[in-house]
Structures are given as C-alpha cells and as structure tokens.
Length: 394
Ligand SMILES: [Cu+2]
Image 1 (cartoon, rainbow, N blue to C red):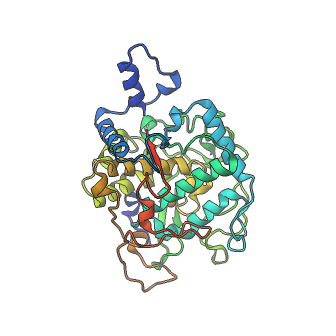
Image 2 (image 1 turned 45 degrees about the vertical axis):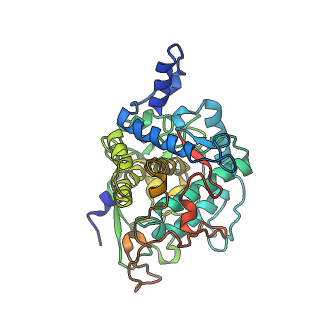
C-alpha cells in the first residue's frame, strides 16, 4: 500500500556576525562567514531560548559555568572537526557492546546505536517519542565519542538552512578532510519505492526519489568507512533478514536530492517550526517540513528510516531537530518542557507483532528502550538541562 500523504508527513551565523558588528573591529574568522545568514526573526526565538535556558540554571548540577555548548559544524574550528571525525572512526574500530546474537551483522560500537534504532524505528518515528527518544540517543553517542574515544568537544549540528540551496557548499558535505564527505558517486538509477517492515498494514511503502549520486562517497575521512547492518527498507523484504540484522559489509553511499533541501530546509521553515503555537503544531511542522526532508536530501543509507544511523551525519542531522525542539521549548520552559503529542507507534498503526493493538497516545511516563538495557521514562528525555543532560545550542 502506498500512502500518498506520507512523504510530506515525514516529513549561527548571525550571532557571530552580530557580535563582530557590535564589537566593531573584531573580525570573525573567514570560516564563520559562510552561508545564508540567520534572519532576525529566527534569531529572536534563539535569543529567547538561550536567555530563558540560562536563567533557569541553578548554582549546582547544570550551571552557566559547566553547560556544554553545541555548535553548528560550520562554526567549529578545523581541529575540533578533525577530532570529531577521528572519534567517529575510533568508535567504528571498537567492538560492539550488545549481544550480537540479536544482530550478527553488528560489527562495531557504532552498530550498537544502529541496531537499537532499527529495533525501535516503528515506535520512535511519527509518534510521541520522536523528540525525547532521539534526544537521549544523541546524548548517548556524544558520551561514547567523549568517554570512549577522547573527543573533547560536544555534539555539533548540521545547520541546514545556511546552505539550503546548495548543501554541498556546507562544511558538513564539502568533501574536505574536515567534512563527512560529499555526495555518493553518480550511479544511473531511477526512483524507487521501498517497503517499511513491521507494520501490521501490509507493504507500507515509502517513495525514494532519484538523486544525483547513488554510489559510495569518494572523499573525506569517511571515504573507506564500512557498514554492515541494513538496509532495512527495501523494494522486496527478505523474511529471513527482515530487519537487516545479518552481516552485509559495504561502503557508505549517498544520493543528494536537492529538491528536498532547496526552498525547504530553509530559514523560513525553520522559523515556522520554532514559532509553532502548540506541541501538536510543532511535531507536525518538524515532521512535515524538516525531518523527512533532511533524511531524503542525504539519501541512500541516511534515508533508510531504520538503519539511517549507518551514515554518521545522522547525528548532526538529528542534533538540528533536537535544537529546533529546544528553541521551541525554551520560549516557555514551564509550559513546554514536558509537552507531548502523538501516538505510541508509527502514525498510530498497529505493529505486526501486535496487530490488534488500538492506537493510543504516548505519555511522559511511558518507558522508552534506548538499548543496552537503558529504559528511561519518556520525561527523562525532555529537559536538555536536567537528569544528566546539560547543554545549550548556539
Ligand atoms: Cu530516528
């Protein structure tokens, strides 16, 4: 079954410029002066979020002194970018911690993350858990990078609107040795339709438009990156390997699809998202305007809803989504921190493991599965400055 509405459903720079203008003589480094500047309307929301967040901090626990700052990849210096990518390759060289009998294809520490994401996909997308689950997921990878591989910085985000009209110009994708590599090599291909396994509704499918790549990435420090789990969403699902848990060693491929970014992942839509007047509007705007489109733009591995963390840029993509949520929450921390909307499964659909389960609404006391035995309540994944989390976006 092909649901037409699905694709649309799934769907800082100005601060620096502002400072340098205010400071008069201070020139920002040239690597900051890139991309489409943040408009003042968006900046007002970001400023309010930062002010309210900092004002909410106490003198113990998460404080103004120890709060981590998550920055745009384009604003990091080369040394931090190099160190981040080194740490990604470091996790890829470490053994998994999970019980690999659950997924024999899990080859390394990054696969612990890809596995649990595959395992939870039909619960944590198009549902009430999207935002809190991914917030904790990002926090886990940030700590793995720092604690297990010595990364000194914090989780960066892909600031899509700066290069909405040509993402290949961004330092995320410019192909340099401090990028995630660029597009995949061009391999002639047409659009496809892939099936999402696990939903009780048979053959729920997702259109995959044909982009300008399709093959392995050819540059950057992830050029020789190997992945093994997935793909999961395929034109034909193999019942013997339904979730892609068997070993499938291959390169990292991408398929940039510009129509998902141009005029879409831009400041106007980012502003619409942070200006949402309810959690329902916020969630719909994030899904319809941003989430699906940012995965679709990158394409191939990143566009598989299940095994998408196979592309390490996934974590930066979701940090931007986490940031938009944080900015929205930060307009009114009291009323919005624990606001939740959405069902307990993907679009409220029954799962094939529980075909008669009626749709029900997610609550903040529901337990989420983060993998490796961590099962926090949903509300633990909602504040960015409490319960072990302590970060702010710039
Ligand atoms: Cu996800």
